[in-house]
Image (cartoon, rainbow, N blue to C red):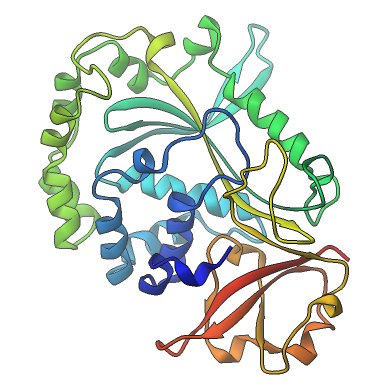
Length: 337
């Protein structure tokens, strides 16, 4: 993957906004068979909203402050970012997070990552962000050898079946069940006004404009979902995955099912010293919470080619300086040690 060719990483500068953008726009690392299309997640105002957040990130940073601390839990950080988007993006409404599903005996069968509305259509979303290395899908594993691609893919399929029974669907939260049993018009009227929502969430004019046009957008998108009919829960609840991350191979190419050949990829190295570094190249050892987006860091956070060989196992970004004076990622490396 050549991050330098994607214009969005030239434009966005705030670290949390860049992380959010990676969740929204990166390709899936592998195919689950029910990936959420990026245009559906972004919405028609998505890029405008991201740009307004980059210029005025306070709503996002305040949200993350309330969700912290994250420690080294990348999954928790990613879930917090996506929750912000589902709660604030013009076309989204967050209904529930980590919603449990239980058997008749009370045993927990699993928990849905997110229950939400996207363009007024009800969704159960499962999010995962993984960084695996190997020569083929059946030996792909993370820095923790117990974390494998095939194991995670199987678990994700299990999560996607949480609401496949009437008993499980009956445990959907009341707001979602209420929506599924009423018309779109009554649901929209129950929401807070677009103007007050905008004033409470952000001062960015473009975001407010996007919010105030929400009602008309819903009415013009009736080709996607027939909102004015009363749908059956089993037919109306969409289940989709959001799979992000990077796959590392010795040649930097992703091959073999279920891997996505167009997914983000990097180089898997036996040792850091095996990377053919140029003497003038710079590198950035990535903290775990910095895995999501292509790195953009000042010179002081980079290391030299001579220092590369002495780093601990993990992920490291190859960086180059751009006209903004910052050092931007052009390639990612993994060494499991």
